[in-house]
Image 1 (cartoon, rainbow, N blue to C red):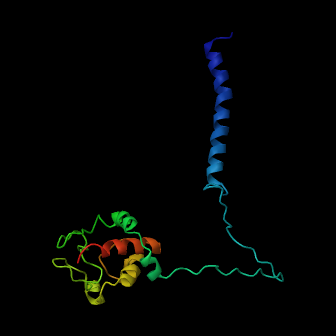
Image 2 (cartoon, rainbow, N blue to C red):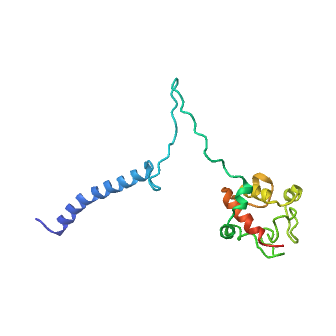
Image 3 (tube, rainbow, N blue to C red):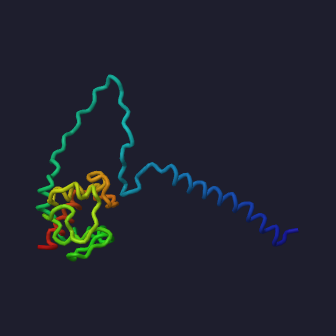
Amino acid sequence: MFNTMTLVKVVGGIGTPLLLFLFGNWAATALFATGGGHGGEYTQAYTVEVEGAAAPAKEEAATEEPTFEDLLAAADVAKGEKTFGKCKACHKLEEGANATGPYLFGVVGRDVATAEGFSYSSAMQEHGGQWTPERISEFLIKPKDVIPGTKMSFAGLKKATDRANVIAYLATIGD
């Protein structure tokens, strides 16, 4: 009456629901987690305003956001070289060595769309001016927003410190 097949059926009958329960718990936790994941830091998803209640006074920032000039003055060239790794796929630092993008040797202070031997888009050629640190920073936020029609398909560098570090690094490359 009690053989190996019966034992397998009993273990399967108890084990299968247990495994399904554990999998369901794991899936629910993954789908409906409410925070606390990154260092126990919680963020408020939304605010419900109550009519007639006094709104709390918004705190003003104790320190103002530093200007780009301040960030550039305090820029870290070594960090800029590391961040430049994102640019290496399309740009070279050697003079005249164009790749998918133009070479960046001496780019800080150079006229826009003047790297020899590179075929610029008409939008970039029409942009004109010089690559000042401020213009480079603005361009690196999201190139296609600054110069619609540019060939540069880079997503951009959102952090101002990253842009300042890269520009400080590029300023060391060239004349």
